[in-house]
Image (cartoon, rainbow, N blue to C red; front, top):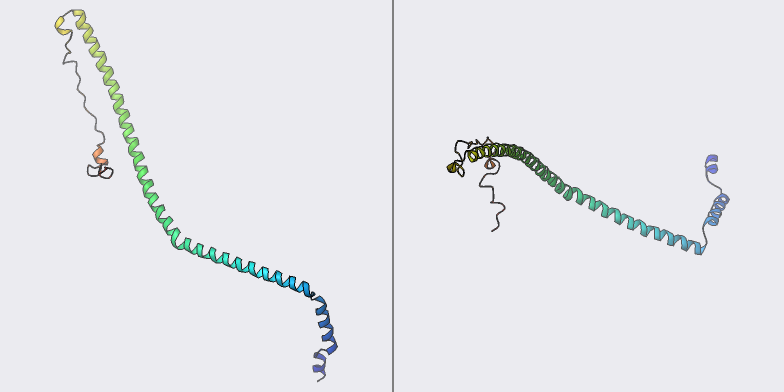
Length: 167
């Protein structure tokens, strides 16, 4: 029993604690300012919660709708890049073939002009009138076209023009 009496606070001690607490509390106008400040903070907290809800909904929309669309476009772009790479290789091949043919044309022009020029001069000096305006058939060279690419192999006839024709 003695212990129970010791554990219970004395009434005077409780009153002195309450008085101290009452002294810490602000007066009437200060209470109103504190209440207004708390109310304003609650409004701002509510606005903040609204903003976070919007961010969450936007994030879920991005994750559910936009990212799969972007992934599909990435796959599409990889296919386009592969086609561009093939076209670049094709253009390089055509460029090499054109350069090769251009060299052969220049060589043939050089060979033809030197031979025909020399034959004409000989015939002019010989003063044979029948040979002045005629070209000799023996001086003509035949040309065998080298094996090159065929455009139809790369662009089939049923493909060329069907997609881009205007109706």
